[in-house]
Amino acid sequence: MTEHPAISTLTLQHRIPHGGAADPWAEVRPLVDGVDLLREAHPEGLAPSCRDWTGPAESWPLAVTEVPRRVMITEPECTAGCCGALYVTMRREGDRVVWDGWENTSDITAPRPPDLRFDTAQYEAELHRAAADRSWEEPVDTIARLLGRTLADSGWFERWDCVLTGVWPRREEPGLPEVLRSPEGVDVTFHQVPEPTGRTTHYGYELEFTRGLSVEEQVRRLADHVLADDPRKTADVH
Image 1 (cartoon, rainbow, N blue to C red):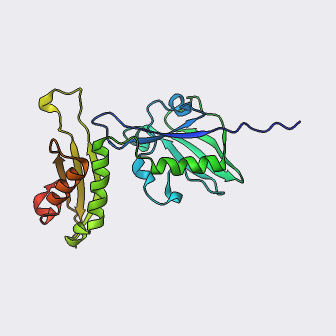
Image 2 (cartoon, rainbow, N blue to C red; image 1 turned 135 degrees about the horizontal axis):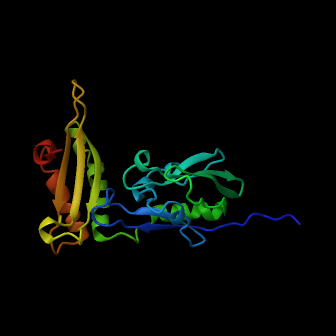
Image 3 (cartoon, rainbow, N blue to C red; image 1 turned 90 degrees about the vertical axis):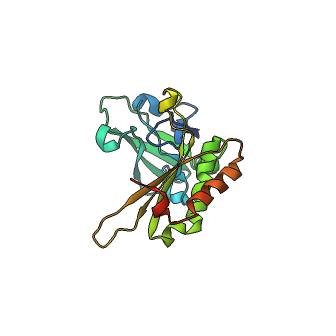
């Protein structure tokens, strides 16, 4: 009797980082049959941010085709070039998705997860579910996401020859003394289109929330502040 490889179930879980993390957006962490296999192989590794799941489906971090693709599945808070990362090769084989060819550039002696196979239909459905999931969001995440969409849709930065770089939730850091703790809010970063000299100027807003306002009111108030005048005059130069 021919043995068939076990078919695993993929679950994607959003995990909000600690206050002060380099990327304050939630990571989208893959669990296999309910187990975080990557934690043992790369304990310090973080999965790709939910920001990477906002484009077309073929651009998502775990998207697969029949052509094998080497994917960085976790990396440290610094960079993969600094401390290494965990990679896996992904491909679709008919009604199966295959993960194999594991490579840990952080620690070649660390245990590697086993080769994995998933049902293609379940795998693709889970990717789409996770990309649309907003249940994990805290108010600061919802405000940052909606503000980012409002600013991107406004065309405001292009009017001033600028490019919106990103909108980020800013979380409180409970471990710090109050005098050193940044208030909860949203950070907006943008840069000016390079001048003829090749020089690029980077700008940023550190926006704070107003107590007692709803998410929608917060977004409206913050957007009005940014869109009120030439952002190159009202933002801080970085």
